[in-house]
Length: 174
Picture: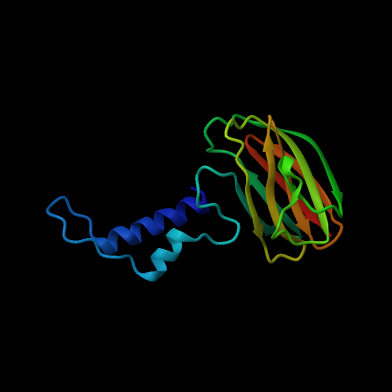
């Protein structure tokens, strides 16, 4: 079970426990306590609450930092193919508008272009991370069968991009 699923399961369980769950007559609903409301209305950095958006998460694995762009579970998406990638100092822009993606941090940006059949053209982020190398990430262009994923970095990195099903996994080291 994914950590995201466990988080939502826990939040749902707390809400059920607080409001009560019985087959009989229901009393007036009780508002969830603040800690449950915050789990329901906001998500920790790196986790997507909406099931209709790609998920972006980051973590540290040994001496490497990792970012995962996860399109699995999105209706209509069946596979992702890597097209190309490039590390440079160019800030990402939103799709065809050319408007700068506000909220992206970093001095270098890893741009990853993919083939993804997403009929709803869903984007996600930007998400920010407090890691040494990885500062932010976004799905900033997803249209006409292709997508761009961008990672904001603190400096140049060695990196490896791989695709597993509907996930794009990027491992980086200084």
